[in-house]
Length: 128
Image (tube, rainbow, N blue to C red):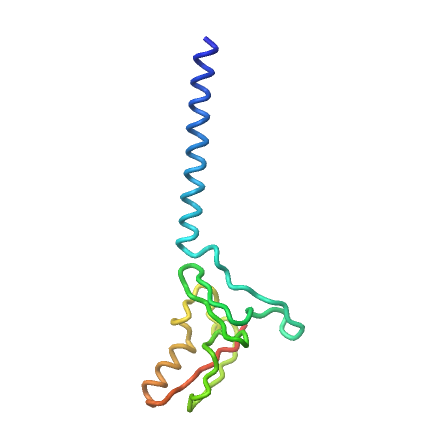
């Protein structure tokens, strides 16, 4: 009798292990799909406590977060732009991780001004 119940117990144990491993694989793949593994990097600063690491492009929560070489959440500084605006602020300007780069207020203002003035405009985003 013990032999039959031992085989039954081993079969159940294998099924449970397979279910747990399968669940972990599904959770890992879902996390990677939604961008939960590519957080923006921060660096400590004597002047600002912490800032985004310079020159990075990350995807988190299916949103793109990128910084230029000055740790601004903007594109590279243009040498040909005829109008350059600097926006400073807090999380409203920054947008946080839940805001895609193309949805930032500064990105939208840059596009609107470029279209309206018909010149190259750059809006820089210095925020925390």
